[in-house]
Amino acid sequence: DASLSCQPLKGESAEDLQQFVYCWSCIKMADMHGFPTFEEKVCSVLHTNFKALLKIFAHYTGIEGNAHSPFSLIGSRELSMERWMELIKACNITNRTFAQHRAVNAFNSARSGSLVNLSGVANETGITLPEFLSALMRLALWRANPLFAESRSIAEIGLAKSEAQAEAILVPLTDCFPPLLAENILPNAKRVG
Image (cartoon, rainbow, N blue to C red):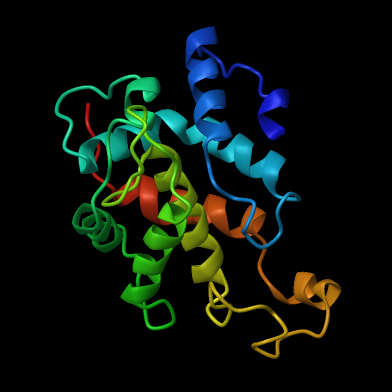
């Protein structure tokens, strides 16, 4: 688990680190192409940007003022599809090779096999904070690899005959997630505080 190697960032409290590590442990990613090879780098990218992403999630879930503790957001707040699509539009995610329905699929895929929220009820309508982070990772991977459909294997689309060939063809999450955050999400998304 990549979170085991997380060290506090400059100025980060032990409690803030603990909250990030807990959130990281709840993120669904084992079904993503390249898992677990991307885990350490993606964990580092999310950790570095966690406070900003938390404020973005808080805004789009309707929390006013400063972002609450991640512990209070992990299972208690859900981002609706409508608000997810507002984020997608604000951040210029869709384009001619990445249609809107794929952003919807990222939302739904992050939600499928959904976590049970803190009250013990399965999330049916929206996505929680860990699911939001998973959806962002899926957006990055699918947007950078427009021929790679989320439900199809590499062989099915004729891109590669083997996983080794697939590794040479597909843009890995470690190369597409940081730019998605830096170029689209962080400069364009609304946030609290």
